[in-house]
Length: 532
Image (cartoon, rainbow, N blue to C red; front, side, top):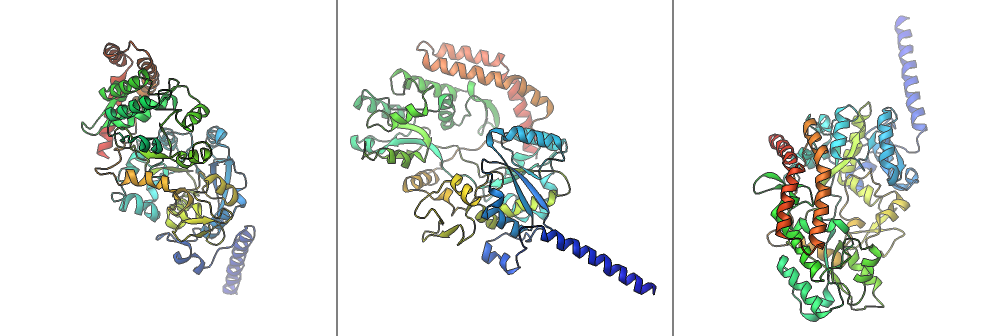
């Protein structure tokens, strides 16, 4: 009798347990697919990660900076739930309010979502919050995250990202951000020039700063009423030009030759930059309003027949400006060319993806990220489901249903229609997706830099982790140094009397502003970085 009673008790418990599971699944708007439906042959490679990740429909909330409020009902998010078994819920916050909303949720602890996009937060701030207990350490689970391990550990060197995890480490050695990978175009910004004008007059393209000036002088000679170089980037022109010299605007930069940090704004290379801009300004080679020009004024100059011929901007302008000038300047032909110094600051292959809330769902949230990092996840989040959101063209690129015949469909359009490219969800882009569906001119820009003899990219600076004392030094001095350096650079360029004497005076002033103290903090942090 006792055995029968025990058996009945077990049956009742199991029945109640299975009933709970059944009830849980009934509450969900998706069903777990069959094993064959989740085969890599059907949905793409996801490594040795097991799908579904969860069979209980555990809710995973993702805080995303987006204006789109319909993503939870989108094709892509519904399919993401189906494949992972997780009840993924997008919490949409407009970009303008995102940082403040995130800060409130982090402070509330229990209300904080499982995954938080770092928009508006520095790596330093995320690491501080992580060390205070807000976020989980990704490295604790590295062996359970096969796609992360493959890309960022096993194949990191051959992918050119061997320092990526190292760059993300907090002072205690933790990594509090699940990283993103390969979401940038190789070339997205740079020098643009009017090829039709250059060809018409047989003008050879520049190879260095002096030949750059010669090009502008020739254009000014041919078109006296023009300002050959136009800019809408304001104070950032010093930064964009400075990259060609391997420096970083007004901030510290890492000198690969000496293996030390130096201040850009007191480096001899910085003087070369401001001397170049000063010459351009004095000789009328640059728009006299280059520091204050609006986008409308810049666009007007760049799209007229003979008012401006060289600029720095986004490669989308190559075709956009052609469209705008079809009737007014039919011969208009804007193209991409090397930066003045020949090399481009690379768009990093890796970066910060999501901070994972510390708690009972932390591993499930990380596994969700790991799926999104896989080939299959990248395909789903940037292309969707074949036959439903896209079909493949003969060239292997995605043609999105509802956008047939359109190249490079905008990511905002695709998010609104299908839930693709949600900021805070994606961890990787598929290179067959619209973001890499280049026009002929955009592809030319990619090829120009990627195939440049001797390499087309500068080295990226290490990303350092500072201790409390070093942070205090940075906080005390850095902002005031940058502000003073900006003011000096502008005066140097615009004031005809400024020259070597004023440069030497600036170097002395920079020291009194604390450049030596800041560089000591950077170089001390570099010593620790090198020991990791």
